Length: 109
Image (cartoon, rainbow, N blue to C red):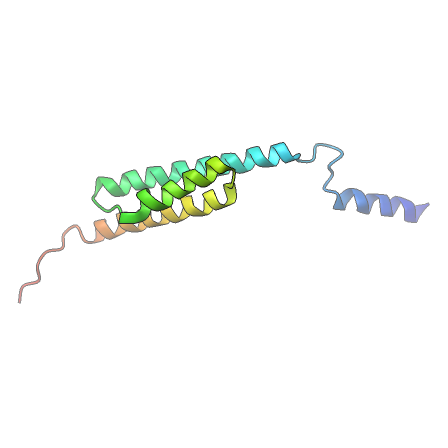
């Protein structure tokens, strides 16, 4: 009897406690969609910030963010998050580059 109880507890633990409020497929899809929306919004905000100092890189908005939005609309949320994070990285790097070089001028001997 003890072995049966231990086996039941093990199965319950490995099952992820799905009997008592485990995540359904709809919940997982909603969570993934929310993560994609959040990543895209963060990328858009970072791109706006980079554009404000003329530091937006060429492909960040027109190619990468556009592909992220297309992937999200097709339901490929993992790819959408990856692309949105890449666009955000490029926006942050463009902003940092613009701020670092804002006082740059010709080098005189």
